[in-house]
Amino acid sequence: MNPPLVTLTCPECGTANPITHQECSHCHVPLLKRYLWAIGSSLDGYKIGAIVGDRYLVQGKHLLLDLYPGEPAPGIDNTVQLYRPYLKLFPKRPHVPELFGALSLGAGELLLLEHAPVSCIDINGAQSTPGLTHAAPLTSIWQKAGLVRRLSWLWQIISLWPALIEENVAVTLLNPQLLRAEGSLVRLLQLQVGADPTLAMLGAFWQKHFGFADRDNNFDQAFQMLCEQMQHSQDVTAESVRSTIEALFQQALRHLDYQYHYDIVTRSDQGPSRSRNEDSCYPPHGTALSHASRMLALVCDGVGGHEGGDVASGLAISILVDALEPLNLLDTDPEEVQQAIQNAIHRTNDAISARNDSEHRHERQRMGTTLVGTLIEHANLYLAHIGDSRAYWINHWGCYQLTLDDDVASRDVRLGMSTYHQALEHPYGGSLVQALGMAPSHHLYPTVERFLLDEEGILLLCSDGLSDFNRVETYWRRYLLPVLKGDLSLEMAGDRLIELANSANGHDNVTVALIHCHVRTSHGSIEPDYSRMVCSGELPEVTDITMTYTPPENHSDDLAVTVSSFGETLLPSVTPPVRRTTATRQQWPLLLVLVGLIAAGVSLLAVLSLKRPQMMDVNPSPRPLLTD
Image (cartoon, rainbow, N blue to C red; front, side, top):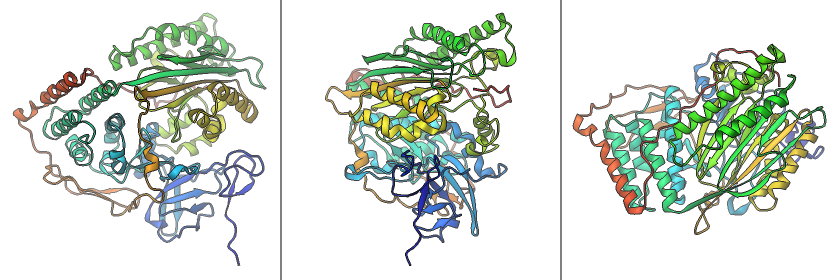
């Protein structure tokens, strides 16, 4: 007797499809293939092809495919401390995987992670499987990457360090099995709990696994000295390490003559069910601009149900353009740029709020607007956000949501109350907790982030008329990946996204701003396509129970970490760090001298006193809910 056919149920229409299909045979919507990374030994008794919990198909030792992706996610007990790091670090996606839920089996429980870098495929140009990634262990592909890409990876790691230290999972960044790379993006397979490692241990780990001797000895000398200073100076901080890595990154861009230009297309539409368009954008609707060296783009969605939403969104665009256009990104300290953006947002909020007060608008009569905007020049990308309009980064590897909605569901996740899927099931899960113009600025907490660009990609800014119901995640391969491959114009992609929003959603106004970021050197090519150099098949096995971190030999800060079935750490005794002498601490300036010498030899050096931009967290305290 033949075994029963395993099918994947389409969340749009409920049709059962063979799991090999890429589109639903009935409604022709791309099938959602949710691959989950399962942490726990209770899966050991199941063979590949078995079905767990009547829902999940075993695809590998820790890999499950959700056969009913339209069904609610399994719940979690929010009192379990093992879940806390994933919930608290929810804003750090796509670096950190998202907690999907927990599954109880006879032999124990499985922790299910979504958006984890769970496979490395697409060898020899074969079409990739939607849902799986091209991620590979960072240590295995380090030698295949160029100078700029390596420095970008290190910058991301040290940028993650403080947040992971706070949640007691920074040891993850010292585990070669968990540290992955997907294109320019550093991604973590799962989190590992452990006694807080030190920067000295991170420096030793970097020195052991990474280097630049095969690319540029001058940069390698600076990197090796940085690693030594991390190990032997108490004056070293994550901020100073990040500043030095960024200085080397900016210098490498100049050394290799990296060139940037940007194309932009904006589209805005009333939609089939609204009487007026309350969205606004900059550049204005219908813009198609090519080969710009600098780009400012804004999308504002007037809060629906509030008379005057179109006035609020238009006023926000006008004020923000006047404030942000004059900013000099290349000659201004990044922290000052970030502060200037935040100040502009607060001024905009005050202007809309004052307009509400002058017109005696109260409570739900007050007009407001969401905001998502970017300011880009050379390799510097600043992203500002309030509300539920979103930003996505699309490259050859995948589609990544960069912003976190300011809604009740996201707030509950960050408070450790539930997973995002659980929170969205609540009646007010999608309600906004903040928007421009609804309250005084001291109650407003905008998110302003900074990214370093070293690859070609598309930045999509959009209102929720498009992003609702995961339309971007579902259709990016069809409408945006062809732009990167040269098979579709940016203008046509913008038109098709508007058509998609109106036909597949249709309940709201829709606005999109598409920015195609082009990166090249004077020689043409940027980075090797090393994803296709990594063999396909299963990744190196991760054994949850025996996963350990062993410090480099002769390192004073010994830490042995043993991970249980959930990634929980059994904490051994930890030898306190050796107290450094004053003479040793004074060695830190030597690194700056060496980097200065590199600048003189190669051409010039970026200022080393760059400071890490401070992220503004959404206020976790309850605020009035807004209905968009």
